[in-house]
Image 1 (cartoon, rainbow, N blue to C red):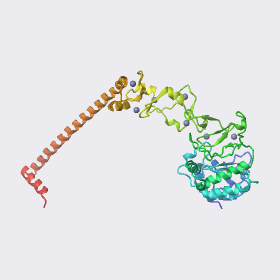
Image 2: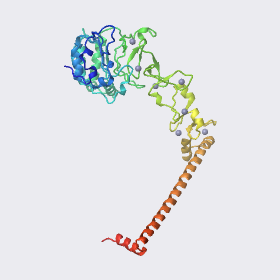
Image 3: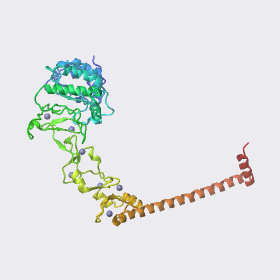
Length: 420
Ligand SMILES: [Zn+2]
Ligand SMILES: [Zn+2]
Ligand SMILES: [Zn+2]
Ligand SMILES: [Zn+2]
Ligand SMILES: [Zn+2]
Ligand SMILES: [Zn+2]
Ligand SMILES: [Zn+2]
């Protein structure tokens, strides 16, 4: 029997074929009525995260998954190691498996800590599926981010094939199987490129197929051909066709993202409709925290060339002391904040009079601050002395009351100080 951790899906009925009246709205189910799609993203996230390998195995056995399930989304099943997937071994029906464990338009980098799903356990199951090349229908695999990034790092370090990880070896076998299958051709299907520039998060993803509708892309079509148009989202790290998802480039890094879900932040310019991705969003004005697209930023902001502090023009104008300004003196190229100018001045490296003038108010400000601190220090010393004096007179008063003379006190102090 299945043991499920929570009552909300513990009823078998939830997993069995819907027999309910057509007019009656059936409760959300993780599978369609024909079991072709099994999507754990349709149950509560907390519950999916609690499911064990035994739970998954029981579900798969119960519905005869090897002969029924074509699409398996293990969304949010972050507690499994993979043994529970064994009932799928040798399936000649399964077409798509998403092992990334995140839902639609969710960034796999956000699963913390890394889920325990294991290569050593899952790959033999996948191998049992792809080894039957004539009957195998598998055409889409989305792997856990951790597997892909470790393989990326191994590949980047230039390790030889002997030290190739078992995951890389599997990728090669799967890739070969896809190639052997024939058209759509001119592509291998798995992204194993090591990008020197840009993000590496596409490593080990499948790029010849739309994650959503499973449409295959032909890389031998001319540009503009519908079959050649596809996009990789750098946040949810999946490939889509133009019909399923609208993507746009980030206005700063220009990587592609799903509009409205994976990229939501807009450029701070009121007349600009560029979007800025989450990673680039942090390149803000250090005062007002607004972010602009690259083009608007070059018009709106200045970065201090020494400390990289970024201030927008508005903030620099309102706060000249801290703002970043471009010196307009002929022959001077300084773009700097006052404290960096002051530092150059102290090091004797500032010779532009205009820049020196800009740093001068800061010297005055520092002097004032210094004086304030000095005054404060003096006042504290005075207060300390007063306290000490009143303590002594209080002590004298107390001893006088008790009939002890100051000479006795002196004696007592001496006896206390002398070693026995
Ligand atoms: Zn599609
Ligand atoms: Zn996306
Ligand atoms: Zn970006
Ligand atoms: Zn600002
Ligand atoms: Zn803009
Ligand atoms: Zn600076
Ligand atoms: Zn200057």
